[in-house]
Length: 303
Image (cartoon, rainbow, N blue to C red; front, top):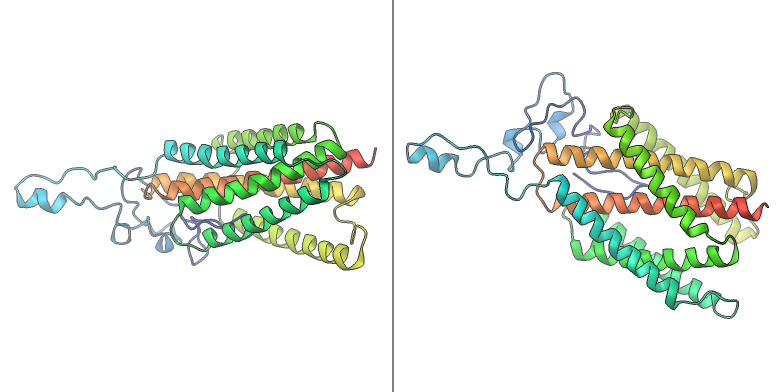
């Protein structure tokens, strides 16, 4: 799995733009053999025995030398769903803890809101840099991922407190519930097969996300240099529309995350890859939460 943040790509998509699990026939805990019906398996490091060090049985040769038949490959050190759940819970736990601390320790009254907001923006910038560093690393760094979660939590705590205090009372809890509902809904739809994550789905989501981010960047630049709401993509009726679009894109990224985890387990990815899955899920959930928070803010400011 080759992890990236939500605005770039995901591990599991090979360098030739094929997805690791598309049309493949993975064997849980063992090698996945490429077939003629899977043109993308060539780019999947887990799909072929020759290129998958985790599909080999390191004791098979030793067994043959002792006259015994080779045993099944050992599964120690391979990623499981439990590993992903535990790493994701740890990452989100750090984020929630620092968010709660920043909410409690950084006042957002009229006298201190500027200072607290500045600290939150600084934490967001540091978190963004850490996320980019991890995104382009080939291996997971648990310390880097948890540090990112800590700084991102500070930013979310400050922003949530400001919105909850000055814009809409209870907005943060509403955004949390909305994020949980989207996560649960996408998970159910994915497991039921209502969402089919294939190459076309990936291409559509990435193209839509790129267009969305470019529009938001242009809007931000107009707001910074021209003042006001920029082009109006983040306020009023247009703000509501783009807020909904942002949440839908986040839901699509969740489906890509679930496919990433499923393929990693099926192809015998190493256990440390669970940290990358947790990293991707955290990034996506933060995306959805912020879109909900912004949407609630817009709706309440229009009352």
